[in-house]
Amino acid sequence: MFKLSKLLTLLVLAGLLLAACGPQATPTEVMTEAPATEASSSSSSAPAQPAMCMGAQPGDQLTVMYQWSGAEEESFNAIVKPLLDACGIKLVAQTNRDMAVLDTAVKSTPPDVLFWPDLRPLKLYSDKLLALDSIGADKSNFASYWMDMGTTNGKWVAIPVKADVKSIIWYSPAQFQALGYQVPATFEDLQTLVDKMAADNNVPWSMGFNNGGAADGWSGTDFIQDILLATQGPDYVNGILSGKVAYNDQPVVDAYTLYHKWASDAKYTVGGADGTVNTKFLDAIHKVFSNPPEAMMVKQSGFAGGEIVKEFPNLKYGTDFDFFEFPGVKGVQGGADFMYAFGNSPAAQALVAYLTSKDGGKAWAAAGFGLSPNSGANGNYTDPQVAKLGDILANASGFTFDIGDGLGDPFATAEFKGVVDIVQGADIKATLDTIAQAQTETLNK
Image (cartoon, rainbow, N blue to C red; front, side, top):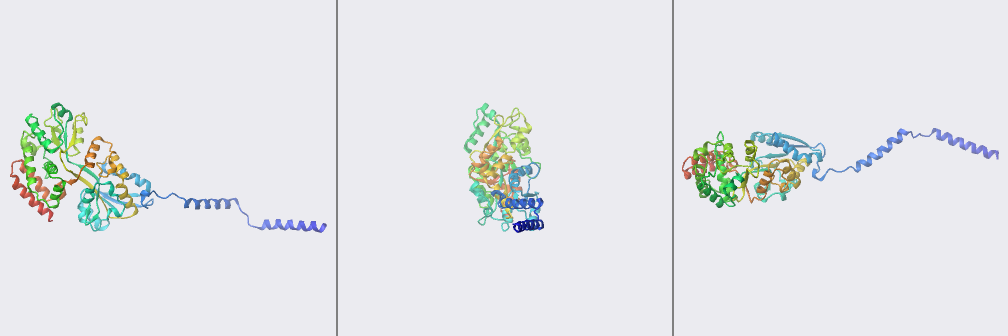
């Protein structure tokens, strides 16, 4: 019995001795192991980047170039903010209006994405530009004519993100109602209304060419282009831009003949030919809304609404001033800022995909940065004037650039000078022959 008790005592002492000599698990060591396991689990279940990021990661840089500045640039920043915030993309922007600067950049380090107010990059850099549908662009949100316009050699490389509409006429609804005039629905209705106003001794048009420089006459050439859109359609106007239609073609002669009547006769425009040539184009807008009005209508772009409010702050849109689409136009005239892509990084793809998506169109409309050709913008404009212009653009069967802007010099200078000369009495056919020659020279440059 004694021996067994002694044996048990020795075993207990040995166990205590082994425990004392073994490794000790301190509280610090336990705490460091547990978080390590949790961190590993957290890493494997971290949420992926949103699908709109196209694989872009936080901190990725995206280089862009555009001509916008000031309030326009702020509007663009507001439009892309949801994408940048969601993906953590860093936008590096350069604003410049010089084509030479763009050319230097393209030949050295082109931006990932370029926004430019014409289609020259499409012609100059077609070999460097990426097909937009290969980097996430959604063409389903745009009218087919936009794709046609931005395609070269079968490759779709340009899409407009912003557009402006010129094919509108401003008037006073209150004045029309008081005089019993109706907004014309067709081009023939417009001609009938103009003659009725003249017969009533109410001057139909206010016109102004004076721009203070070489561009005097641009408001006249815009007017003539809308006549051509009403009588011939956008394919005809685009034919002038491409050279398929000469600028001295008979329908062009006919358009100038009608315009000469309206722009040079004091029965039809304020001050006759001298008034048209010497009136500043902004003053021409004001004459329709003065008290009493000097004319019934003025054909001018969307910016006129802001000029009317600036000059006559008490006038109310929809009652005292409004606009209607140039009657009968089969497509609209305007300008557009196009998007091009030189880079295919995930961040570049994310921007292209976003701006061509319905969400991108909606964001553009909400920012009030002009019109978006993206169908996602429809119904999302906050300004009633812009919303009305948006409806005109959305329902247009085609789109044409201003011919002078689209072709450039020497055509543009010849066109501006020609319309001024014709209003002052120069022979229409001979003048258009000269402009047609400038058209050929421009296209052959």
